Image (cartoon, rainbow, N blue to C red; front, side, top):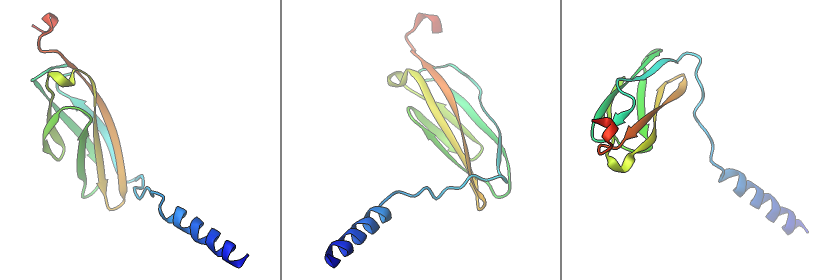
Length: 119
């Protein structure tokens, strides 16, 4: 019976220790004021400049896109997508410092380069 309890406690500990923990903490010291795109929609193979305006000390910026590519970093990136990315795409900007992290997203519609409405 003691082996059963020990086995149960060990199993519970292993399951608890293997769960993913969210170590990010929202910050009241960081605020994203705006996240804007110079063009929206964007024609495939064209680009848009995406800019974030945030307040806080010693800010670091991390950008992600679910489709397409971006160049640059910091407060501003240049986003572009090919014909394979036509549709609504999500770009996320995470702003962080030692006090925590905040994020915001912008949706960019990529239209076909070959669509006659784009000419």
